[in-house]
Length: 229
Image (cartoon, rainbow, N blue to C red; front, top):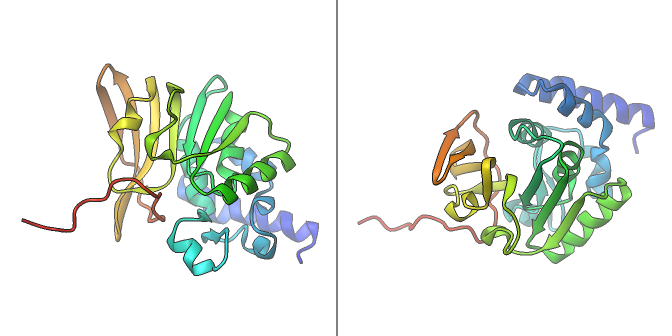
């Protein structure tokens, strides 16, 4: 078990050696990474991995959890995702794929309200407990299939998909407010790119693709047909 001093040194090294070099330079995001205790969102047996540049399985068996996307993403991916959403204190945010609740915790400090959807009931309960322990009161975790978005709610200032999809879901784009941003990692292995899609008018969207990352799939989103004609 790490001592408190070792934990803080590991957190510092995570920020300075992994996250800053990945062009995460927003001072408010960097401050949050030092404030929100990432290790408390990891399973107790794996807390020593909390500051490493790796995905952390949230259930056993670990290899199956990683394949099915039941994991915390690498710290640099989470940090860059939050930075690229360009959140404001008045924003309402929809997250799809709660996992352990860590990304929702980061977002909650930068936005007014977070609704996070988790398809796995056990993970949803774990995330709720983690957020309560962290003292966060403006993030709601709901057990739901996020592939359909938040039925009957919204529109949202920002939507974040905490996992990869084959294509940007058009139904989710319709749940954005004017000026709203959707973040998703899109593509197939071995090539996936971050997409930041901004709603600039009625039925009009602009897309930036600022960086590459390979992350596990979100469940139940459409996949392209494997057949070629």
